[in-house]
Length: 209
Image 1 (cartoon, rainbow, N blue to C red):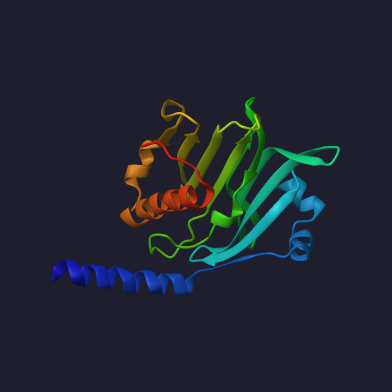
Image 2 (cartoon, helix red, strand yellow):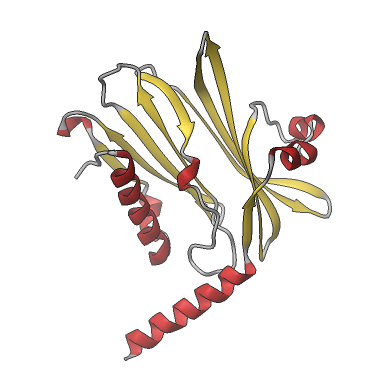
């Protein structure tokens, strides 16, 4: 009975805090109008903005920007570098909360954000959006199965990473959680484990056992 009441309490709390948070994808026009070349220079944004998310929570208004740098070879476009920045908007301007960068490894042909799996929401019911990014790569070899998958979560100013590599053989696959993952609230741990399984199912990404 006590356990049932605790679950009901958490679900009620989660629904209430979700109602206090909002997130949306900005249009290209809104993105360009807000993040002018001058502001991008101020925020040290060096790659084109691929997608911009706007959100509000107990901390106020914030933005998550995803950036991709591409190379064009004939008819082929290859993403070679990724970057993301999470910023908060206040009365005195914009404040960078965190940023990340990654790039192609020698055995990879391309790397890109898997925006389908990025959803900005309050994952543990504390009234704050928990921004995270998901990205992966494609093997340079046409028949190669080497692919890298990475999830980066930022919670209370700390970064937690989940790193996965898949391949043809069992010994080529790996799945690694940062030690800080075990300190995350249980609902957040469950969310990302379920997200991994969803990605595996929908993309034929074979995870290590």
